[in-house]
Length: 175
Image 1 (cartoon, helix red, strand yellow):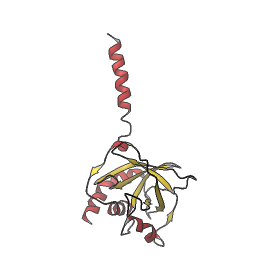
Image 2: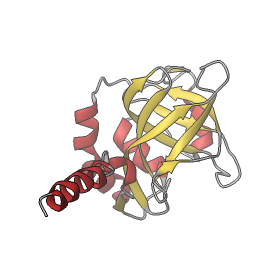
Image 3: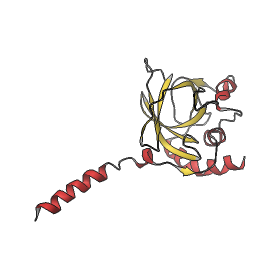
Image 4: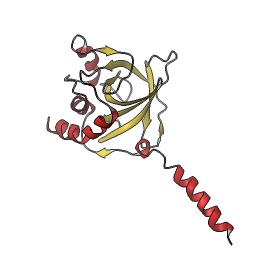
């Protein structure tokens, strides 16, 4: 009889340990908001138009590059399911091949925070990524071409980005 509580306790710990990083499984804040106004509000990068147009519009106005940095906007090229590309804000650099992003409308009508993005390019140059897919709680199978990163003129950190999400949502919705 004494073994049952011990076994039950061990099983409970194992099950709960699967809960781990809730942000990677969370489907985010329910809001009808596109990626562009949200990224503009969160990053302070004042560009307009479709997500893919940001890369070209940033030339001469903002620093651009191939290395992720906190507060930078990652620009994805058009792809099936992303006819106008996609933009998200880097919220944390985890390793040379892993970052977290905060974004709107990756999951339809949701703002998701700290979602994993993995560089799967052959040379580790951030030209091809796979993105966390919250509804399944796994890294997506599709590789997305990255045009690059647009760097904000403002220095920031992970905590500021997370704290700024509600205000960015309000600002972007009123735009």
